[in-house]
Picture 1 (cartoon, rainbow, N blue to C red):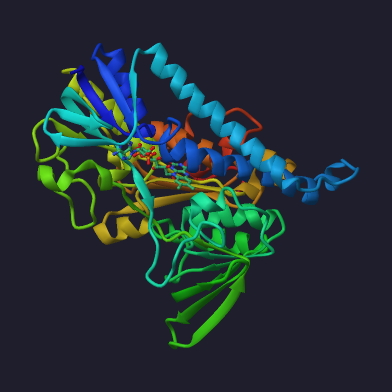
Picture 2: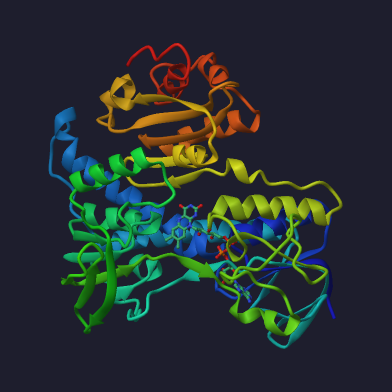
Length: 462
Ligand code: FAD
């Protein structure tokens, strides 16, 4: 029976990063993966393929809307959907093969197949049983659906089906105005679909800064997306070619129907722990079906740990990766830590949306005295030159100490800009520290500095 120091179940960003770090720290490591390729949801059906389609559809949008104004004339591009999917698939393949290469380089064994834990210290894959001092569950998550909505991944799809539709739909209904629904809704809207987003709540992207939510929804509307807010979807009736969505408006209980070629159900994700045999082992779950762990990612069963989407916290690839690295350090006898207060969240639409730390609403609820520094991209020279002047940077800082408590950005490259603030927050910086840091001109980053300046004596270009 082969014996390992660590066996990790699942090769998503949590699992593969944990495996690489374990191996780098000298532990004999194996990783079990049931999919055909490594990389989990993120590389196969999540972050990477969605960003490929966001990129190509954004290029089309730029060509259609901004090229002529910049003096670029000529035949405007048309969509070759088959080739766009091939580009996306090629991007996936490059990334998943990259993980395979890293596994070989770090001498990590890939145990191919679905793994279960017949008893502590043992992992079963197919007919083989392997021994391990430590088992790490990194089994990720799966799309959730609604009662009355049956997924066929052709007409009524989750994000997985939405990444490989047979054609660009004429009419797309998206159920759920969260990150995944809005990213994929944007893709198809840019490619010519009529997109209607139905959301149960009265605001899009729950948990985000209120001002960002409003601006974001306004900009998406301007791009052609239609929103039905405060609406509870009752059912979806689908044929082989069409679907009809029935929903009820919460304000007056009135019933409505809308037809579509494709319905994307983007109502969230749930932990995926089905195949592991956790019941028999007695591994405790939370009320939400997440694997319950302590501060060292240890379950209630000695030697069994869990990280990533299958435990509590934001379902984000980088959160899973950080947990993977920290747990590997702990398993190797070192110190491992994740600062959950500084985990950025990004929406990769155009403009991008990014946040880190606390929102104003949270600070108000806490009764914390804070100040706000805000700067619009309209005052940023680079953004104006690039037709990207929509949005703003908002920094929240403690009223007395000036320490940065959170930041909320909607605008060009928001997903890159946010990291300057993450680093500042990790170092316990004040808004003044950011404001006193020289920023190159002309960059979008100057808008971050201006927002920091606005927390003190005032921004220069506002
Ligand atoms: P996963 O990536 O889900 O990987 C788990 C792996 O474990 C899977 O490959 C599964 O096959 C395997 N597995 C499960 N059980 C077993 C078993 N018993 N035996 C063997 N193998 C098993 N996050 C971001 O941060 N940024 C984004 O831009 C982003 N975009 C997204 C877009 C979409 C459309 C979706 C669906 C998700 C997106 N996410 C994004 C979320 C991100 O993909 C997840 O947070 C991340 O993949 C979680 O990593 P993980 O390692 O916990 O699990």
